[in-house]
Length: 441
Image 1 (cartoon, rainbow, N blue to C red):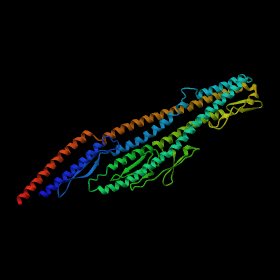
Image 2 (cartoon, rainbow, N blue to C red; image 1 turned 120 degrees about the vertical axis):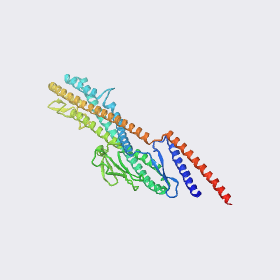
Image 3 (cartoon, rainbow, N blue to C red; image 1 turned 135 degrees about the vertical axis):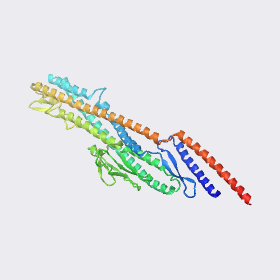
Image 4 (spheres, helix red, strand yellow; image 1 turned 45 degrees about the vertical axis):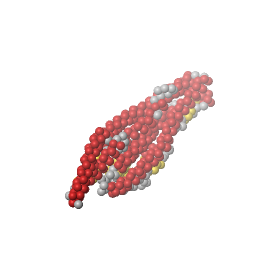
């Protein structure tokens, strides 16, 4: 009878010790943002009596966690995209210095000055100078966009490598979880600290790309890419339960950045435009935005270079003032010699055509500036919305899974009192047993 009592008391002592170990772990990780609070689950030992810590429950919320990671992916995308769009502000809002509007107005004013006095040497020189400045500023704006696109394409391999490293770590962790689960199955299943590392990897991965994931019964994770607006959502697998990971590679298209490809393990090619969330999505959307601005710059440049829109009447012919097929290659098409051959009898007609071209250039510029301003505002609003949503969900999640020091200290005190009481009972039982044995002797 006393032997059974000792067994029961000893099991209680071990359970208290394990429970205090768990509570102390909670306390030591109170300021760890990646830590999820744990609670010991007690189970009565059937037949022999006593108690043991049979499991450790993580105070997690998988639904809230999924919402948080999706919000983090969106926030990461628009945080990066907002910076990339804001960087263009000095060049497309032009609130200070000489603006593109000034270059356009200065050119057309110099053209009218020339048409009023076609033989004036200063007017000729001024026209050539202002035309050259306008062509160069258009080319520089185009080159700026092209240069930043090139820089983005250089950053994407780093994102791809980041994704590959995290998925490799998750795959290894899946194997470790399976091993530790089997090893600790009969001893409280104390392996769930590994799930904190799992969740940390998932959080890091969601900064790069939007993910879809699910857990199995022991906490291993299966991960794939998801884009909610695509019918291909979830088809790009990244990690399997069994501990396999699937890597990405990147094939850039410098001539047409939007056609760059992300290639999965199976060789399937996904256009960069497929990705809309995380940093990969930010770069995809930024390139799309830049390409839209380049198209509008090109419209302005090609209208200026169209001989039907803007020209000078020379002896026996007409000649476009600019040449080129885009803002990237626009250049002055007339020379000082051409101006010396100008047909002065056509000045009034050329002035009317210049006025029409001037109005068209203003409209093209307004379209360009409105496109930038509207895009910038839209990105800013989405950034603030995603940031606020993420902050709210992060607060909710932290409050739910985080450690409350007051609660943990109260639990530790209860366990310590119980541990001390059981220890006294064991000591008393031990003295009683000694007394009985001595009596029998």
